[in-house]
Image 1 (cartoon, rainbow, N blue to C red):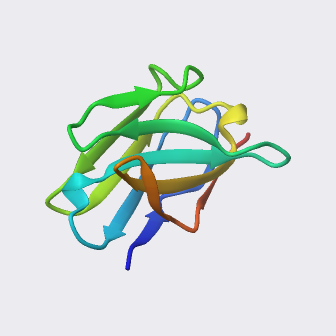
Image 2: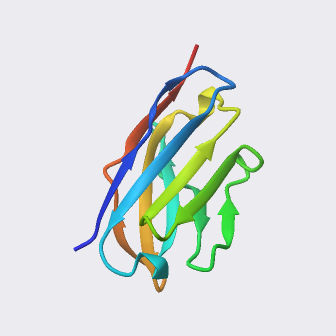
Image 3: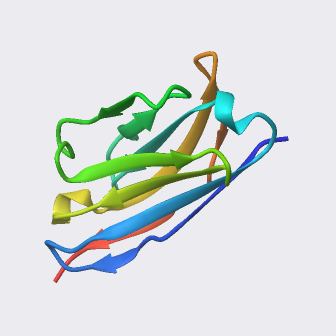
Length: 116
């Protein structure tokens, strides 16, 4: 059974930084493609960043140059380093695992609020 748990959210001022973490409980983490999604109030969930099992990364245009996704296969962890945060980055951030292009699990979400 797959379980994902996010942490690291919180309240930060515009221009600040946060680092989100997600721990994957299950087998064969290294074979998973991992991603971070976010959902703001009244909006659809959107892909923020992804990293494949081969460590290829992809970013939404809105976060390119500001966010960095990384993974540590030895620790079954995926991270999202968020710099130069803007109020429009405010959302609940979710960790997602995929294998063979099929979603195998979601985390419960962690709230990120960017406000002064």
